[in-house]
Structures are given as C-alpha cells and as structure tokens.
Image (cartoon, rainbow, N blue to C red):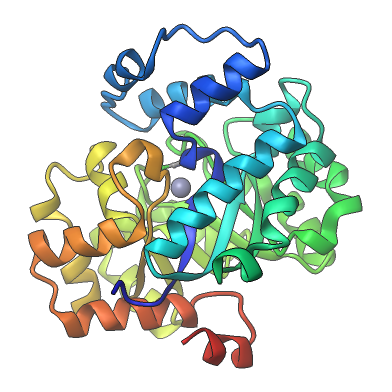
Length: 319
Ligand code: ES4
Ligand code: ZN
C-alpha cells in the first residue's frame, strides 16, 4: 500500500500521456508531427528544461474543449489515487491555452468537471493553482489574472513556471501583489536551474509561501538556514531533476542532504507523463536509489500535508 500523501507540484498538462495526446489531437483534427506513440516516445530525450518545454507546449495542441480538460484531469486523479495521493494541488498554465485560442473558462470549467467529483470518484481532494509563464511579460500575466477573476472560487493560488534562467521572479511583483489582494495563495518555481538568489527573490519580492524545486538553495548555506528557520516548504521532484539534468544521476540527488539540513521537503512528480513516474514512483526511487529509510519516507508524506494549503482539520482527515 502506498503511503497516504499530498501532491503539491504537478502540472496537469504534464500528466498528458502520449496515448491521450494523440487521441485528443485526432479527435480535434489537430496535426502533430508524430505518427504514433512509439515515434512520440522517441522525442522524450530532454537535455534541459528548455528542450522539455518545447515538447510540453507542442503536445498541448490537442487540448481544446472542456471535455478534453476533464478527461486529462480525470486520468491524472485516477492514477494519483492509485499512488496514495489523498490531496492534490494542481498547477495549470492558462497562457499556453489562451495563446491557442482556448479560453480561460474552457480550461477551468473543464478541469473542474473532474475536480468537482474527485473526492467521491477517487478519494482525492483537490485545489487549483494558476501558473504564470515567466518567459512571457508581466503585462500578459496581469491580463491572465484578470481573465481568471470570474473563476476565483475555483483557484486557490498562483504560481510561476516555464523557463527559469534569465527570468528572475522580480518581474512579477505587481502581479503577485494583485493576486494577494484577491486572497490568492502564492508559490513560485525557483532554484530548479536558476541560482539561489531567485529563491530569496521569490520569498522577498513575490511573498511566495512555498518554493517549487528549490534545489539550488544547497549552494547557499545562509539561505538554507533561513528556509529552515522560516519553515518554507520545498516541493522537490527527484525524477524530474534527473530527466532535465538538474542533477546528473539520481544517486547524486541532494534530497538526503536537504532533509538532514532540516529543510521542509516534499516529494512530487512535476510532469509525470514525461519524467518516468507518478508521485509514488518518486517515493520508490528515492527509497531504492538514495537509501531513504521508511521513517524518512513517512516524514516526507507528513510534510506534504503540513506544506499543503489544506485547513488543519482537513489535514487531519486526510491522514
Ligand atoms: C515545468 Cl519541470 C518545469 N519547470 C518549469 N516549468 C514547468 N512547466 C511544466 N513543467
Ligand atoms: Zn514544475
């Protein structure tokens, strides 16, 4: 039986399995440059975040209708439930869809069709986090926040993702201030490929309550001390880090050192359809390859509920 856990770092578009990507493209008459899943799988040779993002944005082309987003989310939630997930805080990338002429309402309402019945259907409670693409402008992010205003009852918070290096968090200060004024929670990807200074900036300038990835903090002992002192959760994604070459091999992943340093780490899947596993596969991998004990795994599972945006009583129910 997999440990009960919360998943706090998963991009719903990154749960798009090749079979579904091709089926949706065919159903919607969208051309993809891959004849079949075998050919598509061969394209999964990433050398870094940028080369992954190219395929990630390309395969989304088949997602067009509410039903498409519903099927995508339902497939993820079924898999997550089988991996012990009891609560999922799910990222989505509206700008990637708006740019293709798919409206905010189609994305949110489509996802909600699956999320709204997830507790009953899968035993998984859910929340949605809307991410801004950091390689787009702050104005585009602000327009995206505006477009989300009719749906704020369905969105718990905002995040920041896509290509990190050269796109420091500070550019989005006003957007994050506006999001906070709307009562939204704030998280941000930082320190995946970028320097430790991006992590500090996400905390200080954006008011991020949780850091997605955060790996590069290990280069800055003063920052580690701060993250420990302030109990800032880090959503670590081990298999993602290997596939995108943030670390060379899993055996060299800093997760054990991060836990030893007292950091509030969680383990997550990021883009499981692309990176070779869902969240419990990540738990297995760090157990097998990094030798994390069962007690450490239980600590990681406990951390996932502590670091979630669940209220305290819900948190206890989930455990
Ligand atoms: C992402 Cl692994 C990763 N990093 C940054 N942005 C992303 N969007 C989807 N997956
Ligand atoms: Zn991510």
